[in-house]
Image 1 (cartoon, helix red, strand yellow):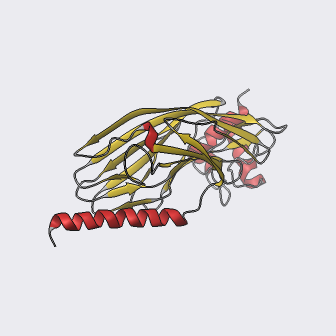
Image 2 (cartoon, rainbow, N blue to C red):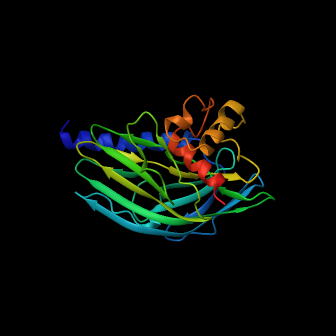
Image 3 (cartoon, rainbow, N blue to C red):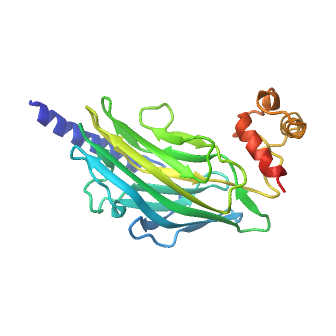
Length: 279
């Protein structure tokens, strides 16, 4: 069998495996279609009677391809909105099978590259009596991906002000990344994703990927400084006291972060306490 035939069979097998995996992938609870980036529909969801997320102004910012790689269009990118854990709102983006570009996944073969970026606005408002503000972390999750040889794919999340770049990459142990959010974000944020696929000498495909947002309430998570779902005098209380005394870095967090914390670094905890103590 010649080399081109092998590559052809490999590409077909890769697409089949990715599609099969997508059939068994868990979907966001109560997922609702929001159309495509080219033709978005009304896109909002209320979570647990606490917060209403609204997503709007979807825009394809850039799209390129080289070596025969696909140049994806706004009509190729489908949008679904759903709920995540706790009070999280979840946007899922996927390749529309009936879109202008053929295929059921975003892909690049040997020698090809495909890159695209899009933006949107996310806003939150209280659905109950308690006020809400963005919590940390946001999460980018590459839920379905496949690659061969040295091919790579990456999805970067952009949202408001993050303390560091945040991206999920093919081939890593985790297909997700936590994005630490700087405290004091406005209720309406510009967000989006930057997607890159490079075939090199292999093949890569990306299935659905998600951007997850979360909030805290004025009388909800307030004193749960480390974000582990409970209040502790020797963890949350100690962190708050040390912060008010002016301690920062490891002097703030050493021995004071509770088990199961979602905020464990000094940067994340300092930013959270800044948000609590800013008038």
